[in-house]
Length: 264
Figure 1 (cartoon, rainbow, N blue to C red):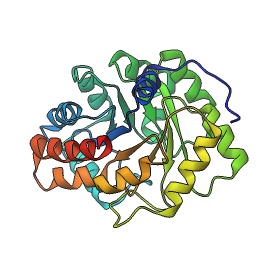
Figure 2 (tube, one colour; figure 1 turned 30 degrees about the vertical axis):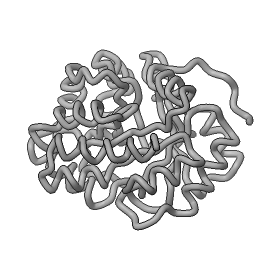
Figure 3 (spheres, helix red, strand yellow; figure 1 turned 90 degrees about the vertical axis):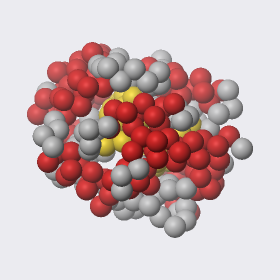
């Protein structure tokens, strides 16, 4: 394990504590502002057993996201949703677990790295995920996030070579986001072998929690991945239900099923 020990930030501290209790970690994703009740959804999935929540800041060119989350982003943008508005609204979420935002570098750079990091901290947001900001270009953002007390989550992919994987794992705060397969977010019929292999490789590199996202759609898939990883991120399967009108109660039922599977 090549990672140097580092002080855990607000997101990582909670995830480490839960892992030490023997719990497999569950992080649902919700697109901010997709509908009037999005904050109620955030509260509902927290109450249903999430360990942290990833809230997407809608963006017009979401290169990592598949059709479901793209549709949610388009819907949110059509309602006049802005990154600043979502960040401000989360200040009053009061869910009792950490929230991390997922954004792209364009909106963050538009706000300004320092201003964005300080805004996140002021709204009690514990972490940030920026998938299109590679490690080699992330020093300024990571420094501002660290200074503000916000965990800057880094991403690794099945194609990441071992030397770079070690560097990314060492730099990541909060957790290491392991992209389970090559492609955009979306539901899949089975867990990709690449997800299990990447989780295993990352776990050899770091003691920071390793969570797998992209393609995790069912309780059985979450359990399969979590046999190797520390937990999962589930986005498209939840957002599809929300776009179909299931609302906070439907979100809670789905997340509770994931939680029950992981706890069994």
